[in-house]
Image (spheres, rainbow, N blue to C red):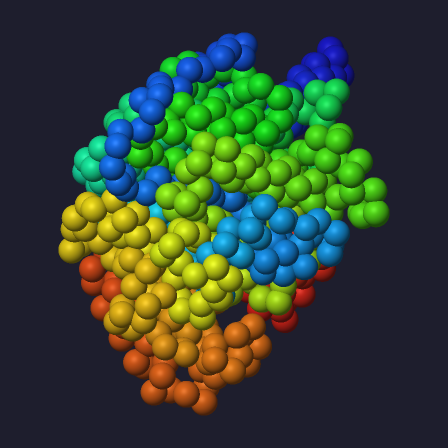
Length: 543
């Protein structure tokens, strides 16, 4: 009897252990399952962009404005700023914006991750001013990423802060902030949004509540480009990356039109967004419009069409080839937009700005995407924040200009507002890019912050300060633009001066709208799939 009892207890224990192990394996799928239950995804359907006048009213009209944003594109991913992916993927359409106007050789993201940079573009303000310090991410994402990550330095998950996290849908741009869309709408512009939003999902934080007349959106931080089993897709899964492991089972293949229920896009998302941008331009050719075209490429998950993948047969590495195919598709769709402007006779009266929200990510495992710079997305080294930044405006910007002047995402708001004749509130941090080009803008420092990790560029000098690890990096960018020689030990006066600037900026910052749940190591000189040594330099990124 005793033996049978012991056997029974052992059997129960095995079942419980097996059940627990099964649940641990299964739980990563739960956010996606719950999300699709709450918001079922409908079939694709055509959308109708509201049409303006067939013929434009007589007389001079303000310029149309198109802001095109890539997602996680490295400085080396365009052939205007580098070699292109593996030296095999030219980007002629993206490059043409620089050739027809200006390439800011020192164009900076406002932050090293997605949503704070987008908040800066939309408001013209440092996002820390209004507490938008961290990238919006669900608690389940932060927990899984911190628990699953390997390497010599372990991430930290602050479980005591979870109680202070608002619902994920509310993590976004405060409704009281004035957006570029609201400023331009006040000047009679039709305001249009296509693509990634990542600035809040509640009705008062969605694009339509933030000044956009029409929005075809991926509201969250990422989305699938095609269903993983689509006959036309080529996937590259990064098994070494905890972020990638979370994305594949949980991201939907869906978009929303003006806040409606989610539905499937038509085909490959990058092509879908390009095609819809062409339709939006056609519908609004007779009136001034602002188009915010926010592609989600080449952000993970890495997915390409078979046609683009096959076009790059001379790239042997599978991941590099998929990534290059995504860039190829992105460039093609930028070309569609530029071609439609020409077709409609609008090219000479349209400002086109192209940029990326931050530098290329270490977690795709490709070494050269930010070459020649050190660092990655989620670091304030140049690889994380020095990004492609081009603008063309015929008659106002000399074609082929290469400007060494430091421009930043915060400058896009003021540029668009001035071009449209709108007043710019003094609380806006950015300046008109044309005043930077003319040399009329006063010199200014540029600031970056995410929790304990801060950086400032002032003149030729750049200082980064980190509490974990406790370290200062000081570089003279005039002689060392790739940040090879740390001068913090030999230039204490510069460290003190720049630290004072950072402290002054911090005094103007708002309390973070939500806490950072994770601090994770990002090694400066190695992608995630390469060996990381404890002697290598790293930062602990707070988010």
